[in-house]
Picture 1 (cartoon, rainbow, N blue to C red):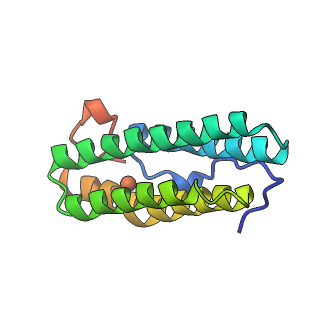
Picture 2: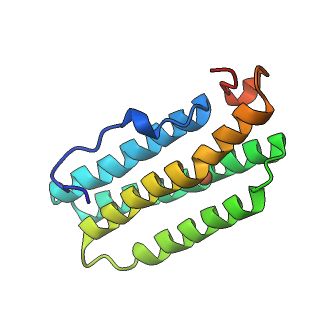
Amino acid sequence: MMNIGEKISWDKGWDIGIKRIDFEHRIFLELIDSLRNEIVRKSKWDVISRIIREIEKYAEFHFISEENLMESIGYPQYLNHQEAHFVLLERLNIAKHKLEDLSKLVEFIYQWFIEHTLKEDIQIAEYLKEHYKGKNLTSFNCITDG
Ligand SMILES: [Fe+2]
């Protein structure tokens, strides 16, 4: 559980070891914190809805980033992972229309981020370490040897 009044900051335990993905995750978390902050400040709906839209678009972009990486390394769980992304976007789409409690929306996105990162994204990093050790996947700034 999170405390809506408390700033969300990055936890090192969320790094999976693929630089570009970790970088994108940090931006995603900053967006979640911006939403949290505007809700706490009781900002106008216009401000809040703009951030929700940014989160949605950023999630779409980020998922494609991960999918392109998985595709390029021949990741065997590609289709399952892609399906998980699809389900998350669907759930966000449903959640954003039930806005009677905005703090629940933040909590939902935050939980999704942590669970998906630690259960699913981490497996991409493990696959890379196992199959691409010492190789340099420059376009993804992958660390495969450390
Ligand atoms: Fe993912």
